[in-house]
Length: 374
Ligand SMILES: NC(=O)c1ccc[n+]([C@@H]2O[C@H](COP(=O)([O-])OP(=O)(O)OC[C@H]3O[C@@H](n4cnc5c(N)ncnc54)[C@H](OP(=O)(O)O)[C@@H]3O)[C@@H](O)[C@H]2O)c1
Image (cartoon, rainbow, N blue to C red; front, top):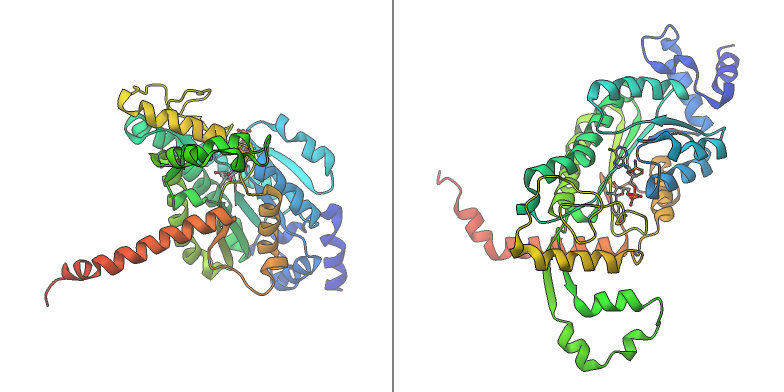
């Protein structure tokens, strides 16, 4: 009898039964049975931030391909209404700016949960890059970046956690970045020229005389993504801590750390000050001429790498869907919290880790020397 009742309710409009909302519902004593039924119905309800472009948009599509239901969110609804139109049975849209005050985000969460009568997965994808040097951007640029990339992600997560805790299951995904591990680049002039022309001349590398390569291939260190990189490093530590805090409630936390993905990300980047500056992180930046060369190199670097990133946004999205469902690449294994995606990210993070291990080897005696003598 109960089984029939459950079956009748589980598939009404593809939404979750109304008593999904918590233990305090009159039907809560049947909760275990009901959850089993939803899980066997095998779809998840996702909320994804920043779905107007790039990875967020691809994630909506991959979740839908998997048969899941999605609440696609964006600052401007007009930019995602096509998703709801294209997938009327799987996608509902909601206006959501992650920098809204927490109280507003709590109401948005309540509204979101009512759309499919539940929530299983929250993806903190909204984010942007802020390029510039620390002295010029200072705390204004840091604050601007963190408002979206860090505080926004934490506020959205906290707005949904009461629902996930109450139902004792769910997944929180943070889209971090390899840049949390690598805040500076070594750029070679030759590589910049090459990446610009590679598409036109496939054998460009062979065409360049050796002496030109030798003269111009000198490494040039630029320190450029401290604002963005530090925001993603913060997210990394937050994800690690949160994972432990919510584990007792059956909630899983992932921090995805991709390398460069070929999206509009670089075009949407904000500049503290730049030669191609369209949108700025702060209005009251004073340009410091000592950094002109660094800004120039940075501008060139982003122009030349734009469109040459090696990461495929759709493949990244598919891995995330696999993780959430513990299938595909995640069938017999789940990362603890962090997952690195992209051969460039793997290379850079490995390099950083080797550097840290070398440091510990070389300075281990000094590290131990500062302990209190008992
Ligand atoms: N592309 C890469 O190489 C790369 C590498 C590692 C990590 N990531 C991370 O991947 C995520 C997606 O980036 P992407 O490459 O797909 O770039 P993207 O195409 O620029 O997408 C960023 C999305 O975030 C949204 N967004 C920005 N600020 C927001 C706010 N305050 N509230 C809500 N939405 C906001 C944007 O929406 P609007 O249309 O409203 O601006 C856009 O939909 C970001 O967190 C990024 O840091 C990217």
